[in-house]
Image (cartoon, rainbow, N blue to C red; front, side):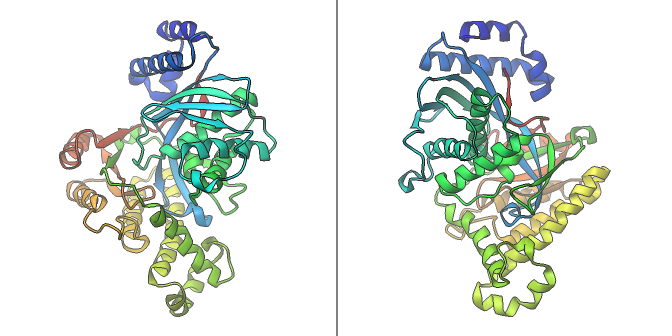
Length: 427
């Protein structure tokens, strides 16, 4: 359909059933308006007479496992009802143009940008080129397109806006040029490749998988080329709880070194044993080598290694608890995970700016409000700045939100729904 036809289709209720499934019944009207506005924006930029498609990629929330994926550990993650959506149309050349709301247009000639360029590290151009290079190296088709995107996965929110954007480029290439035959797990792997090689960030694979696959998933990265992904049948809302994310508004500028230090220090410990990653050693080996490791890699690296080994155990306990519907056991491990992240992983604030500790403050406030309730809280995502996560009884959500919004600003407490799908073509 062109823009006029597609807008009429939406206004006539053509996507109501799809939007109910993806976003929930109460969100249909809002999503209708959101997609209609995106179509108008695309039309103004690239023309209203073109055949267009609609695409969506979920944001994600890490439910269990903090900084384990990059050392081939285990995680539990979920796709959420905040997402990036795109209106896109084919081109007949080697150019991809993407205009993301609030950002300058990116224009990439993928026939010329085929290898990493250091000067473009950290840019969205590098992600687009990296996804194209990844598709090509794995034998998939690529081609040009124009796209307008808008996202409510806020940048720096810990909900993986960057992974969602990477997956979106792959999602469009998948349906536009590969008949939807590229598995979403493969799209996630190519997104990691783009971020590692072209964007210049040594990330793991959890964010990309969780955004692309959808629902609650337990992921074992022992073999990152073939991660074991299992759906977890658990409905948080049916248990009377909301997943709340609090965006503390911390500054993510110049934190790449902080993020990179975590996998680097963990791998330095593993290298002492002649191994590539911590998944290949056990706690007894680590304990016996602590004196030598303190001299070789320093105390923080040792503490981070212990965090990894114990966090991996917690992930398995939490997965079992979710599968059994045992919230008491699950919440106990969530709190234990948060304490380990604060004390041993040390990713709750950056040592570059000790006066800014929004995550520490948010965790303190969450504990103060929720400690007498059946609930849980912990740092969320990569850490150092950004967000905390809390599992809050539905009847306590408004009180929790009032406290957090009062401290960090209006709408900083985000109440989420776990959605059943990840990277999809809406139409």
